[in-house]
Length: 236
Image (cartoon, rainbow, N blue to C red; front, side, top):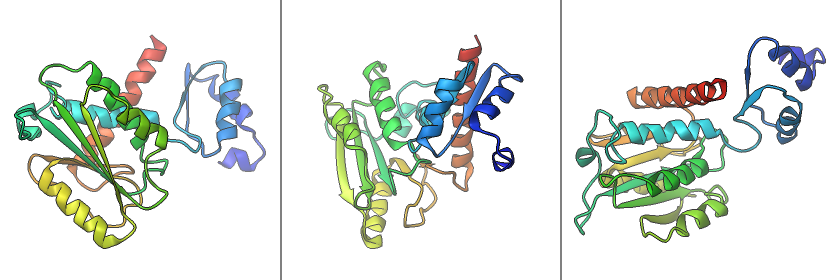
């Protein structure tokens, strides 16, 4: 920011950074700047910017579910049988409840759900037989319609997507209460209008823009691990 105030362009900054490493990481609020960076950079460039979301964060959030045993035998501390409630049909149903502003750049919900769909397509037998995604957000702050179409277009019957309006705090509080009772995953997007309680045993709370408990620390570590894995892949 200091260099930019002195008149240094993004192209100048990238030229300087490329002298010190083989990979550049860019987060920027301007789509035009991201486009410029892609065209200018001669080294590997990892993007987490523009007006869209940080895909590396979505990878990290998916890693939380894998390590926690929510998606089957992921090698985490929590076993799938403990983390995933059993449906009436006898199969395992994972409930993912999402509350807040899904359009916020710090909450990669669209990318997270698309990655989850693709991961589940090749998952093991121990994975949930059904994923129930529940979304509660203010009007105009919901999932991208392309994401909704992508999830609902799956022909294996594995995903169920329910959308709720969250313009009123009372409605949001009721949604959160029901989510706690259902268990599974509660994802708080940046800008959620209500304070979330501590997660009960057997449930995890994820945060679009950082939280205040041990669970958010584990989420931050998973996001970091996902980014480092991408860097390692680019440098291999």
